[in-house]
Image 1 (spheres, rainbow, N blue to C red):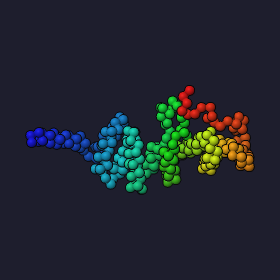
Image 2: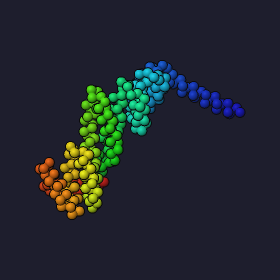
Image 3: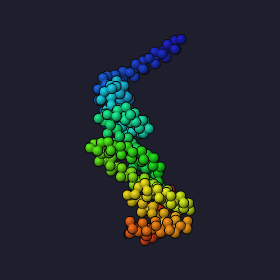
Image 4: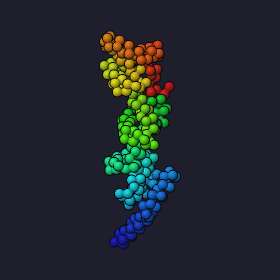
Length: 258
């Protein structure tokens, strides 16, 4: 009984101390959270922002705290939590003055422009990774551009959209190239066709046309091969594929270090 009383008292003291650490008005807690964010103290900032959101519910301060909470989670490496917070914000605050930033931040969280240290060592390209995050980023940026053409975040979102579209097109061609190397000519032609149809204005369609031509050639479909080659010559008269007939990347796969 004595031990239980001591333990209970200790726990009570601990929780009281914890509550005391985050006492204050919502405005004061928010100011403290911003100081933590400025210093890179993301975990402390997250704790404070969660408390601000609860105390200032229904106000613009609560909305701002929620956006900062998403940002802090992203910087702390909690991508899934950041996206969850942003999805909740976008759903519950369709008329918020911060909606454009929420869409922009959701795009940034998904924007896959860093393939990591190990991928850099192995010479893996962005186009060789799964592109679901890139697709999600594109959709967020697209929604921002369409709903808020005058937003301060729109110009950067447009640039990132262009980058993302090129990456997605490169990914389709990367898969088509993979199939071509392994003799899966029908799959290679279909994937190259998909790249051309979905991303017609990207540089990747040059190689996609070449892959289509070679795939049809291997399949004995001379008419389709000639059509693909004719379109390649018409749109890319100086294409290096016409000069050396080699599909890009034949020399070394991404996983070969030497």
